Image 1 (cartoon, rainbow, N blue to C red):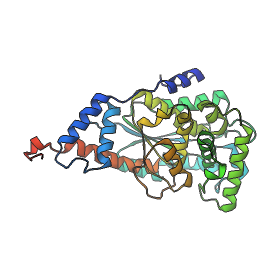
Image 2: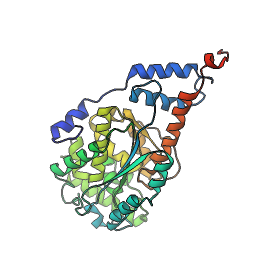
Image 3: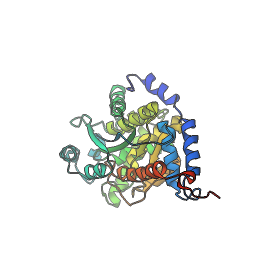
Length: 336
């Protein structure tokens, strides 16, 4: 269950998105109105608590099984010189995640999240999307299904990625979904210079031209321009929606994974929180197009789910205040 064995299964799920439990949401709003504080005085913490209540289907939400998942994939487009690091770094960083030595290991632990790593055919990079589709239909469905399978029994899902060169396909997905020139969406990624950014923009423009006329649905956009780890994040977002599990998105790449889904059904972001706004220039523009307001803005651009994991501590704070505060009646405080 919650895998996508066929294109029809994927498209059916995307067309029939579940909605939050409005009864639980209304009950959470009613509780907020009775807590010992002026209405709205906790700002977005109140909004986050109500959001969580609606998607978890309980007026007093909990994070008992928070899970961070990192999907890793390699990209054939790296051969075009779009990254400051070689492709073998993807494998090396997966080993670092497994050994517990990466930033996300520490940040997930601090946020009380279980962490899992899902490498996706790292010895077999996707095709260079300037010469043809990045993935076959079978490969894309497999990646979507790997993402769906990773949701498990989580009650909050943080999505991260590792894939050298993946800001390039992310920029291509954003441009294919929301328009604009390639240069509007590319950024420094792992640290390329101005010449490198111009090269990335040219590669993205070439890929968009190559597939023009075929970018007419979420699946085709993902398989032609994306990558395995990006498709896996898209699959995880959709499967989480099917289960009513709230999702915390990370940076530019994770957010770009949702863009093709939003092209078909803009309501896909309703169960998502934007953990942060990264320093990658296209991210704030992408968040705006998706109607997402970031919880944090810390100039982070690491990926790995790192910014989203930090944001979980704010989400926990929102839930703690919502659950633990006394009502006016309980505290014997006058409610004007």
